[in-house]
Length: 77
Image (cartoon, rainbow, N blue to C red; front, side, top):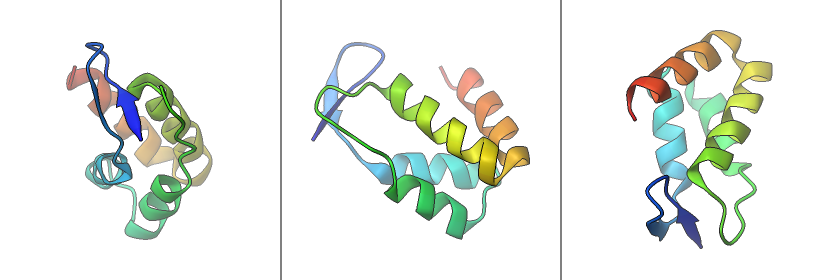
C-alpha cells in the first residue's frame, strides 16, 4: 500500500518506520510493536495522518514517549 509523503511523493507504507521512531522516542518494544501493528493504513494515507494516529495511541500508552515522539518529529522535518 502506498503512503503519501509530505513532499507529495508516494512510497510503500512500512509500519517499521513508525515502530523505529517510537523506539527512538523511548517507547518500549511491546508498546511500539502493538501501536505500529495497529496502524490503520489505507490507500492515500499521508505521513501526517500516520503520525497523528501514532501520537494519539502513544499519549494513552506511554505519555513520556509521546512527548519525545512529538519533539523528535518536529525537529526531523
